Length: 274
Image (cartoon, rainbow, N blue to C red; front, side, top):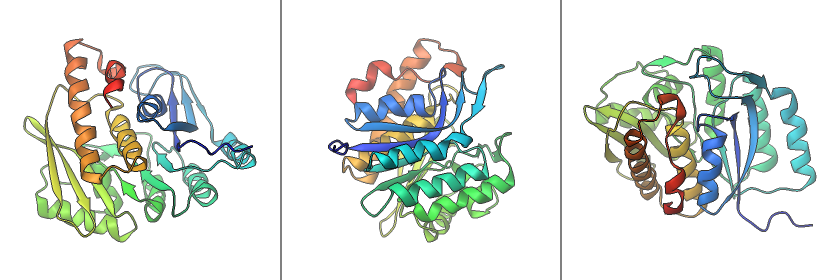
């Protein structure tokens, strides 16, 4: 039986039942881009950690058996998207997934979810951040924010980096593997910038209006669009414009509805426009 008649992306990240982030954000986005999303959860949350209370179970003990069943089905993927990984063991399991299901025909997008505003997230350790750098040689596309780019290159964080600094960060990241890199969500007063680097090309800065405060899941929606567009053959810079434009539109509606910050961005009614 052939289970590989339709394009598929494997998404390796945590699952939050409420809050529009991680797998629950990536799944509808990738589906709207006419690609089947096959999630491999790393952890399962009732709602994400931005809430005061949540239930969590670590899925690490089950990830290998989960992969084994996919191997029995001889599943083949067009893309792999990685998000939040909570332990060095999960990094090793992800590397094993690349070996079993990756290859030159598979587009691998690594979203190194580690921190923001110059600091690691409270759930992250320096050891785990160093371990995560092992994913870079396997990545075709890398989507860090400024903090994550600095951590991965062991560079001192700058809250207002110039183009020269951003170019140097991308060159350092690119030496480890990924040829397409976007440093996301650079805050410049009332705008947000995405610094787009593609090996061999002049970098591009894509600017969008800054609308409201940061909301959970925005980066997950962004990386899901980038992964889906890559599998669909869209150019990298055009894909970043696509993702930035979509998020701007969704943020306007989210702010208009006065949604709680914890509830993510209201992308559902715009999915048909992807």
